[in-house]
Image 1: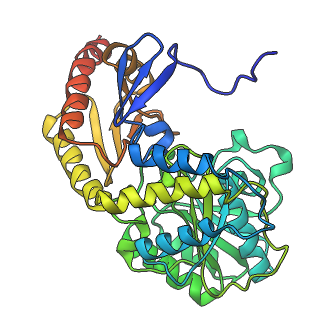
Image 2: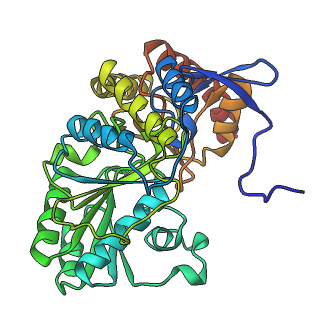
Length: 385
């Protein structure tokens, strides 16, 4: 049987990881500055993560959500205290797409409305409702477009006010930092205007923190610097350090009702053990502050390096975009195959994403810069011909 061809694959097979590095089946070591789509939050092979999951696997890996699972409440309590969202309610699922799917469903249940406001270059997932609010027509099947969506320019307050004025939208969904779109940050003033407009019109505000959450931005959630309080927050990616887990935080205004939401695998014993291990490492190793510090160091070093062809360096914490005046595909492949460094793409072909583990240090930043300088010497020659 053949595998269904989904991604263009690089000719390498990672078999082991430790910290910021992975090794392939030939024994070659690679610096991971991509974290498998921002998933590896506390590093590969973290001993506490490994011990937590091994211990849980040896006792009970799974039972359905029809029985009490104390780990779910333990995870909710720790997440609430660390994120400063103690008053919210936690629903656990399996992925970011599923988190956004349930967020949009809850917004429609709450308001009785069908329309949604999203933003240009947004990515929210590939399931039916989530892909409908993703600004990428190529991945929307005819069956996915089941409700009306308006795509607005990120940061355009006037366009936002016009779209909200009819007071007929169920939700506005916005990323704390646009990741796949090329690392674009909504300003704090824009987020405040967005929160106020939603409050005034009875529209549910959904903050998609799937990629930007869990300390990556240098705050627990990226939106928190603006001081707003969203109605729903969606999470996944770094939440499980590679173990599939996602969730939404629901404002106290939402009243639970049996059958409203449900999941078979979400919040399993093993998933909760992974989620707890990640939070414990973030807390015990002070990774929120570390992400802020290392992020400033990384962006400062990139700017000081004055790399040829670079037109912009943007981001926050350890969520960085490097924009070039040409498509970065060949450069990223060269970095990977010649200098053994993983970096990420985006829907903007000219923007490279850096999404390393929150445990990254000065040594790894120096190694990235050295690889970039060497690769760009070749790239510059190619583009000057």
